[in-house]
Every structure is written in structure tokens, then in C-alpha cells.
Amino acid sequence: VTSVYQGTSISSAVRNQAKGTLDHTYEGLYIQDRWRATDRLTLNYGLRWEGETWPSAAINNPLKNFDPRLGFSYAPGGHGNFVVRGGAGLFHGQIPSPLLMCQIPSCGGLSKYPGRENIQDDLNAKTRLSAFGSDPFTMAGALSALLPSASTTAIYPSPALDAVIVRFVKNHKPPYGAQASLGIEMQPFKDATLDITGLHVRGIHLGSFYNVNQPDPNPVFFDAAHMVHDSKGDVGSKNYYCPFFPGSDCLPGTGFGVIPGIRTPPFGVDFEADSKWDSQWDGLLITFNKRMSHHVGWGFSYTWSKGIDNGPNPSFVLIPQDSCCFNRERALSADHAAQRFVGNATLEGPTHLNAILNGWKLATIVSLESPHYFTKFAGFDANGDIFGNNDRVGIESRNTFKGDSYQSVDMRVSRTFHFTEKINLEALAEAFNMFNTLNIRFFNTAYGAADFCNLASDPAAQGCGPGSFREGSPNPSYGTPRAIFNPRQIQLALRLTW
Image (cartoon, rainbow, N blue to C red):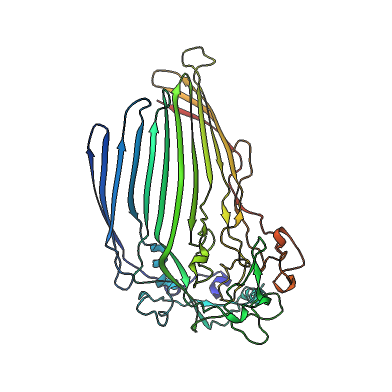
């Protein structure tokens, strides 16, 4: 630490203290056959096998991953070249190896969690991480002491509790998807194709991790004084994990200190990686294309869909709020977008009419997408379990903050000059997001209080401040943009081909 503060080099012994290696192999085999059963019916079927190997100290080798797949196309004939297509199959993925690789350097903890010795893997960390958790005011003081100004040393909180960032279960299963589709394809008129497909995808054995050291909810706090709300005004109880002592309370802002609850000391948090999560996506996909004819070509694609999962938001944190109740995590997926439309059109000028009009081309793409949804976080350890990054406001569900819709128009104008039979020069101008629409990608959804302040019966006891902003939040940044998509971009280019 002194070397970091003074700007000097760090010795190799310190740099390599957390060094670790973990061998890994991946194998796969795929067999496929195509059978033309009749002049109108064609079948495609296959079987894929995948396997991984890891050291015996890590996870059990997942070698029994067999993925059968079947597809068909049927052309009944008649007007429009009507074709029915469908298929189903399994598709395995791989174990999330970057997380597993993190165990030996620092993430895995110095020992297995007591009582789970036969469940967790044997990869102990070479360095120790500690956990410190408390109410926002005590935490702010500890962070200020950690990096004092004009100082060459830092003051660390007492490392009394160990932090296990991730330790895998030995029987961690690889994720896989079950997919089924059915669609029709036809030619409604000359030079045009229309495809309408329904698609169902189920994600199974999805990987994430949860805190096995989170204690049972404390029933002392299931009283009227600790009722909280969701954004619609509904009232209910929330799981609080801090123990009850005189002079302490789980609700921040009361003036009492918060003593976080743990199940088994000296562990502060013990995040166990497992494959307990799942997802579901259903969609209707419509695609139309009109091939270029008479100098015009156009098309569009439209998707109507819904995605649901019980896995935490991957853009923020991967830990469920309540280890006891994964069903409370089930909600719209962070990737859910109800509707998406992409349209395109191309206009081509003549090639042999005159020197002014020859070689021009105009193309445009219009993209529209429904809003994504995000989770409203308290912004600190609101339930008293040490870990403060996954606590939601009140009894709010995941992904209830409605984001921004997306609209963008791209355009390209080009002209080709033919000097000889082999030498051509293309001059082009392109504009992306031509109308400079502000498209917000992510929002600041840290509410800043344990309950919705505009609904709480005693706002002063919920961590609410004197200010009141969006939905009663004490945080003026709540609901403001955190990241945006690209603004308008224009580029000019010359392309020479010979």
C-alpha cells in the first residue's frame, strides 16, 4: 500500500502473491443428417455433444451434455410459394469460467463455508478479503478514513469478517437453452418475401450466486413500525436480517446504528455460485423484404416479445436480495423489450441515363425499440445483511423502473464514378442518428432510501432527507441518465476499387 501511495514499484513477491492457474478443456462433436422425405417435406435432425474438464479441486466435469435437434420444412404448393418451417432443440453453454478463475487469487475465501464442505469446491484463495457493513452514515465515515487527503497511509476498518466473493458448488451444471419455433414463409407478390415466426426459448440452469451466510429473517421486524411500500402504494413487510439489540434498528435514518446480521462468523458474506436460475422468452418475428427492382428496394422486421427471469440484473449486481426466496426475484428480464422495429429502404439511380444522374444511391434505416426496465435500488444495506448493492426500495419488485424508448434514423448517400472497366471511385456521406435523438441507455436508479419517502407514514424514519425529487427520492440524481447511446455522427469517405 505504501508503494501505491508513494508511486514506487511493487515487488514481484507482492505482485505474484495472488497468482493462480486453472487448466480447462472444452470438447464438442456434432452429427447432422438431412432427409428429403417427399417432394414437399424435408427433415433436418442432429445430435450435439459437449463436455468440459476441470481439475479435481474445482467442479465436477460436466460431460453428459447431449443436445438433440430437429427441424422441418413443408411446402404445400400453390400460389405464393407457401412454406411452413419449424424446429426444436437443446443448446448447451459453458460454465462461467472467469468467475471460477477468480477463486484462487482472492475471491474463493480461505476455507469452505461450515456445513457445506461436501457442496463447495476445494479452491481456496491465496489472499484474504474482508467485509465491512453498516448503516450509510457509519459506512461513509469508514470510506473517508480509507483514503484521507494528504496522507501516505490508509486507515482500514477492522478486518474481522471474511468476504467470499465467489465459491462454486462442485456440482455446478452448465447452462442450456430449450428452443422451439414455428413459422411460415411466402411470396405475397413478385420479388418479395414475408416470414412470420413464433419463437419460444427457455434458459435452464443459468448461473449466478447468492449469499449462503445470510441469516434467517428476523421476525422482530415484522411489525407495523417496519412496514414498507412499493411504488404503487401497496404496504407489506420486508425481510430484515440484522439482529435486535437495544439502541439499534434496521431502518436507516432513525439515528440508531445498524448491526448487520450474519449466520456464521467469521464469514461476512459467502457468495456461492450455483446454477439455480432460469429464464423464458417468447416472441413473434415478422420480416418482409422487397428485392431491388425498378430502382427501389425496401423491407422491415418487427419483433413483439416478452422476457421473464428470476436472475438478478446483470448490468448492476448478480446477488439476489433474499437468499431464502428466489421466487421474489422473478420479473421482467433486464433484456426485455416489448417491441422492436427496423425498416430499411434503398433507392438507386440510373446507370446509363446521363452524367448527372448516373450512379447515385440513397439508403436509410429506421430503428425503433420499446423501453427497457431497471431495478429501483435503495443504494445501501437497507435490510441489514452486510451486502448493500442489491437492496431494493421497500417491497418493490425487480425491474419496475421504465426506461427510455429508442429511436434512430440512419442515412447514406453515395455516388459511384466509373473511370475504366476496372477502376471505380465511390464518394459517400453517412449520418448515424441523423436527427440527433437523445436515446438514454442506462439510468441512475439508486433511490437513496429504504422506503418510498412520498408514501412512508414516517418519512424521517426511512432514511429520507429534506429534499424530495422523483417518486419522493432524497437523491437528486435518481432517475437521471447514467449512459446514453451515440449522438449524431456524420462521416465522409472516398472508396477506390480496381
